[in-house]
Image (cartoon, rainbow, N blue to C red; front, side, top):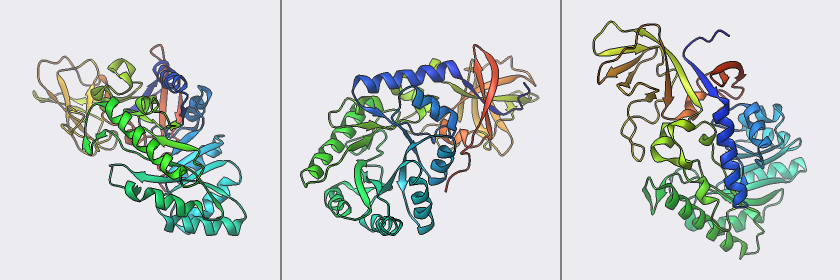
Amino acid sequence: MIMETPCIVLDMDRVERNLRRMQEICQANHCKLRPHTKTHKIPELAQLQLDYGAAGITVAKLSEAETMAQGGIRDIFMAYPLIGAHRIQRAIALAKSIRLICAADCYESAQLISQACVEAGIQMELRLEVDTGMARTGIPYVDAVEEAVRIAALPGVKLQGIFTFRGLIYDGKVDSDCRKCGIQEGEIMAALAEKIRARGILLEDVSVGSTPTGEFCAEVPGVTEVRPGTYIFQDMMQVNTHACGCTMDDVAATVWTQVVSTCKPDVIVVDCSCKSISTDTGPGKAPYGLRGYGTVVDHPELTLARLSEEHGMLEKTGASSVRTGEILRVIPNHICPTVNLYDRVYLMRGGEVYGSYCVAARGKNY
């Protein structure tokens, strides 16, 4: 099989080991696993997650949901506000053929969904997004109970649950302790759910957690579902925070890149560039303490220090035997946006590449 570099190669033995471990954690805690497929954007891998026991999947955008449904996935939560009349109509059409749970973070947007659903003669499941510290979408925590009461009274929608994305935050500050961040996230949302239920609203799901916090959120009584994404592949952010016990041996996705120049004494140039590896999480950012824009496997003397559109510059901190034409493997700092840069990923078992998957939801950001 001819593989042009740069490319992504998946070690499927590690993929399946990662899936098995997270599923066992959730089952031991009687908590549902609804993995976030924005990490891989591949229906075949979503189906593999379901085969291992996931209750359904999570997506970020409606176009991702449509792609996953076309790939045979029948239970999808879109953890992103459903905004815009045309998108609401697309969501209604999709909800007629699969279970689609949508999201809102305020009464005004839920009201528009409600009106469209009444006109279409359907009832749509909704979850209320709550801001617990990320300061992006989500109703402020202090306003969540009253907003839930208002949304639950709307026709055409069913307030099915609440959800949040908090990341590595503890007491309002970034923190690298995955356990205490996860426990606090779960406790905050479980307590909120009880306040909402006390107002007569029968919430089914309390959905929380990411790869760093998911296994600990799952331990919290009242949490019904966790939504990790990166765990399927892992990356340097997870290695450096030991998320889900992650080590270098758990990383399942690497960018293979070819050395294109070694004629300078201080730098080695590869064909892995900003068009082929994520730059959103760069060196030195808390809480990850990353070195460069990725880690070169088996070459601690090399740092992927600079990127341009078509070139990656590896700086040397010691002697290196790397030669022009050699293939190197790089672990991305952040695998999720890296996958979205590729049309296809290659599959490997026992060190042998044997096939590939199309990244079907690549660019499905609308």
